[in-house]
Image 1 (tube, rainbow, N blue to C red):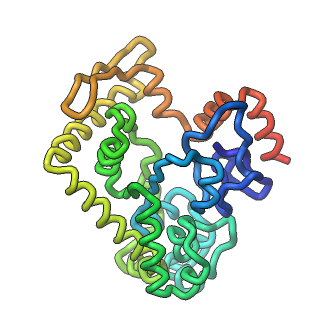
Image 2 (cartoon, helix red, strand yellow):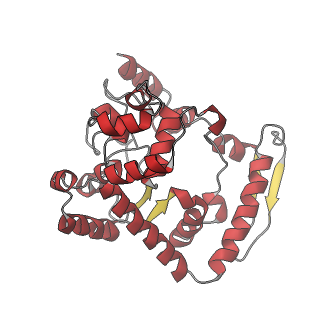
Length: 304
């Protein structure tokens, strides 16, 4: 769906890290076509989304424990705003001395979840309990479910059921797994407490939707966990099959029918798509939508 980044957007594969959908960051639709989904990454605003998406769109969000999110940011982005402190404990120094980051560093703001889900400015500034409860209720009404990335497999099985998809529709392989041996800064329980204190809005929002996920799972009945067990077994097999040594152009993995899904096959192209680097995948789907000329347009805008 994304058009191409403005000159100040450092990420060529996302719509925006500081705006919701608008005519400047959404590529106009090809003739007689409609959008099916939004990707990748943009700030949530229901009115803006409804301008571009069909009326019967199902809204599904994703959240992560604030401490886990902070650790991931340290490991993946290595932000100089944190790791630039030269003392023995740069994380604590950041929380004691660090100021709010600029637009390009939204992941290091105090409450990135609240910000990205469109919390009112007054709530972000004053942490008013009444406003917070109203905001959470609004999200509950607008989102069919919130994926909890800390329980991603459980979330995928629930999403499959809610959308009446097949198992193949929610298959994935493990990518971008952090190599902890390369992570030089040790985060401790002290740092966790500092994160939770600073991200107090996000903690409340996350805990609410964590509980909501498990309530939705309980409502699915006991066979949910039978499906989850089978899904985990299948994912392990697919991870092996799609590893570089296992899958070849003529290899096929046959998955038998289960009580929850029809049978299907996993082929070379499935593995290729599931293991494709995000930038390349973005380029591919853009060209599929708008033709190869779109890549030249993106490169021109991005590097100008």
